[in-house]
Length: 80
Image (cartoon, rainbow, N blue to C red; front, side):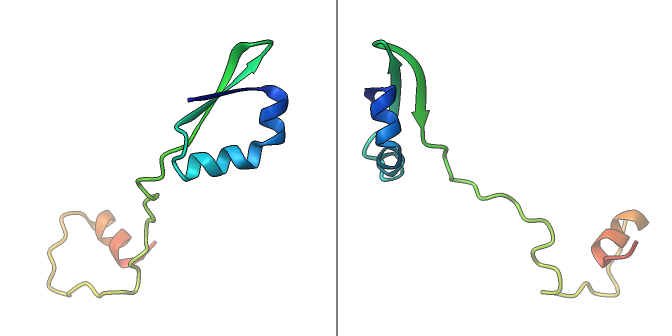
């Protein structure tokens, strides 16, 4: 944990972000008049967002597949 005052944090903001991204520091505490008021931490990027429809057009659905629901079947086939 690194502690700094507001002016120093404003001046070194890009460096703070770089140090977080490189895992040189886990968090930065920003102080005003020597009292902590904020904490800057890295947002984890482990799970990329799920992209719906990314495989559209990559494969075909066999004609003999048995659908349980016509509404679900329409979604898979791209019908309205």
